[in-house]
Amino acid sequence: MIKETASKADVNEALIALIGALEARDLFSKDHSLRVAHLVKLLINKFRIDADQKQTIYNAALLHDIGMVSIPDTILLKKGRLSPAERERIEHSPEVAAIILAPIKSLAAERIIILHQGERWDGKGYPAQLAGHKIPEGARFIAIAKAIDAMTHHRAYRRARPISYCLDQLHEHADTQFDPKIAEVAASILCKGIISKK
Image 1 (tube, helix red, strand yellow):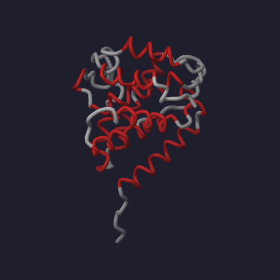
Image 2 (cartoon, rainbow, N blue to C red):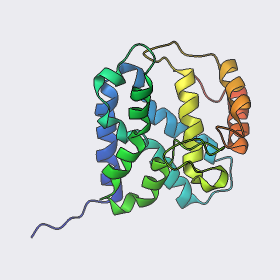
Image 3 (cartoon, one colour):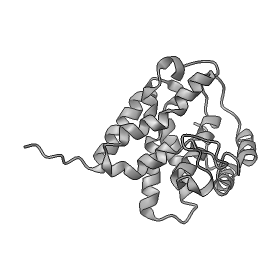
């Protein structure tokens, strides 16, 4: 009988390889997950979070886009802005990610974080309209990190925004879209030039 001996690290490596294949579909998304995970690491190191939880949040950041495998190229590679129906399809991807990760018991904590990455501080996000501290902590970090990466890198439908624009967005949407404390730390990191556009 063959025993299942795959470790959590082995599973992560397999999923990261899948994300690499996903990102290869779209040059504008290349290395997005790695950049988001790096930014999450910078952010969580500014907070008093135990080592195990930091690792869980970092793992979730690496895997946060796994649900995008369900998005067809016609949407993923679209040059113009998305229609409401296409946007809804994208917003459903965290739930797809949760389905993909459900059989992997060792990633149960990461799965919950990834599922709720689209929630907003004011409760107007998705999929469960959670608000404030009811949103899993890791999801709040990822929400800000992926927003910063999206703004500061080229997309199929627009050029990268300057850091000044990103700072304005963090200040404007703190306490509505973003956790205000994390947004404040993210803005500080941006001002210090720790995050660079690649």
